[in-house]
Image 1 (cartoon, helix red, strand yellow):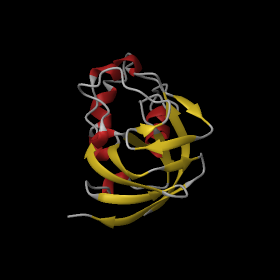
Image 2 (cartoon, rainbow, N blue to C red; image 1 turned 30 degrees about the horizontal axis):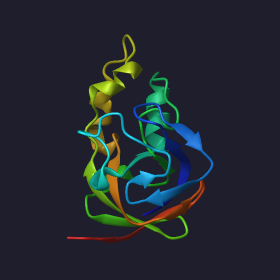
Image 3 (cartoon, rainbow, N blue to C red; image 1 turned 180 degrees about the vertical axis):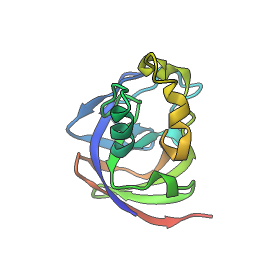
Image 4 (cartoon, helix red, strand yellow; image 1 turned 45 degrees about the horizontal axis):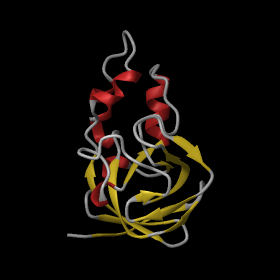
Length: 157
């Protein structure tokens, strides 16, 4: 499974995250990124959140006002099949990074800001088929840029 990092996104905490042209991948995620509620977000096992651009495009076509970083993802990717992703999969990312998927993201009420009359709750749609994204831990850091490759290396038990 191979894809591209289309956007790197950071914030001082909460959503939305804003795009940056480069960042450093560290054990706690992207440099410059932080969490508004560390009780539920962040930490070594949830250092990164990955969501597919395809998911954003699908929801945008339904009428939700989404864009890269809107759902709080650090990495907006293209080309990865989130329905076939699983905890324990490891991905080479950028020139030297290595990450391991740890768990599916459970969309929370923070995303209510994107609910719109007649469209229903975005959380319900994000829970389907891995659309909400995957959390990952960082095994090896390094510089990251938009358009860097992301490719699956192996599946840990």
